[in-house]
Image (cartoon, rainbow, N blue to C red):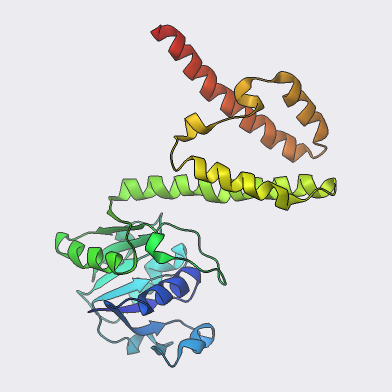
Length: 261
């Protein structure tokens, strides 16, 4: 049995706690937050504390707080030579105070309170600064997910940057689409099957092969018509930028194909 102490009470911390609580191989022995109000509903399941000096011994301490707070909270930990990890996709393991063994336990997913996450499908990426700590991090990851991966810092940084594109930027495009449909009284919900199919396509095809639309076809009349329809200058800029990016990608591929013939 792996014993865990969670530090923090944000979205990631809440989802991790629920995943660990459901695991037969992990026990969350304590949950820390500077204000225990948001985790008080779990008082009957786990020991809660708002005092770092009262932290009990565990196999792994998971810092699940905002990126800017990781270094500070790790410095305040009242012990040494224990395994302390954070859950950030972009913060270095070296940001954890060196008085403890250090690592990363990065669940590659978007988390919102109130949503149900099947953690068995969430990729868990893990790193350790000391070789001896990889085994327990691997076992911890496998206790809640069937998709685990040992990675290095450069790979994690690349995954986090790519995640911003596929999740944060894509969601903003959904928001723009929502504004466009609302402006004409059309139903955004009618686009949801298309959103799902687009995501499903890249399970089997590369994004390059899955690309369709007027930009790829270089359909200048449709592109011009779309730009004319957009009365929001910001939306026009996004449309132009994305169109140019698609055209550049597929024009370059077409040129390369012709040269190889």
